[in-house]
Image (cartoon, rainbow, N blue to C red; front, top):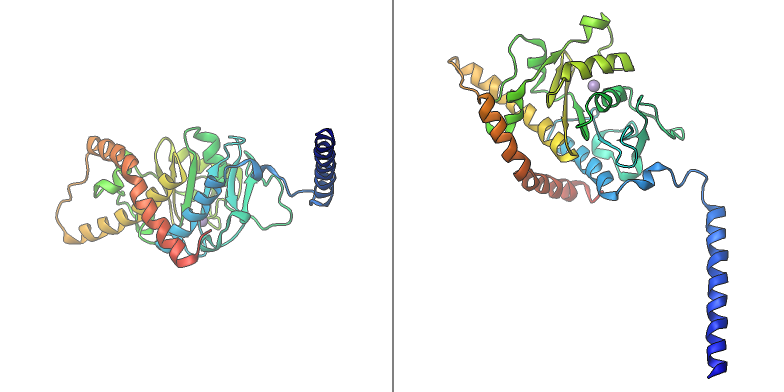
Amino acid sequence: MTVTVDAIEEVSMFSRVAMIVVSLLLLASAPLHAQDAISAVPRELLDDIVVGSRILADLGIVDGFGHVSARSPANPSHFLMSRSLAPALVTADDIMEFDENGEPVDARGRAIFLERFIHAEIYRARPDVMAVVHSHSPGVIPFTVSKTPLRPMFHNAAFIAAGAPVWDIAKEFGATDMLVRNNAIGQSLAQALGDKSIVLMRGHGDVAVGSAVKVAVFRAYYTDVDARLQTQALGLGSDITFLSAEEGVKADATNMIIMERVWNLWKLRVQTLLGKP
Ligand code: MN
């Protein structure tokens, strides 16, 4: 019996030593930056950014341009966004961490979005916002350049009842290339957003925010649908009855509950079309 116990102990000791040696070897061979802050982020959140990016591409809300971000749960003043890449091509490995000023925590030579200041300044100004989508969705553009305000046409776009301000970059910054390429421009945009769910950008596109990636994606999509429907309704030439502010609040609360259904449908579509992220 004693021999057997000793043998077990010997084996056990041997495996412990072996494990330590293997661990040390792994540590020594790991690239210096392999374990950056992204590793502290739940995989589900990275997948939401990937799936959200691909959904918006599939729905025609983004093309080669546009981006989806999420506030970092590991460091809430930071946010997560892909390297500069067409949204349909984003994978979890492309997600990078950015600080409160929109600067990459560990760029490692990767190209980054010029308009990351949209995200940085909105996260700074709005502690309730957990996700941001920026797009140039075509249906919305007419409402960024005309005097006709975007209004809530139907219950899916209920969040528009709270307001859809239009921000004009030229008002503060004169003639530019229209891009939100620094913190000051980002701050101006965040200020125009105020406490709303969307802000339209004159001659450029829009930004949708929400309490989760799926909420911001939902709002980005239905902002575009709503804009197209309003353009159609305006063509009918008679008065339009929009959702009232109270209907907007009530319908938005319901949308928050049933959103999962359409998110799961969109997710399945992009996984079928583009493969699992
Ligand atoms: Mn843009």
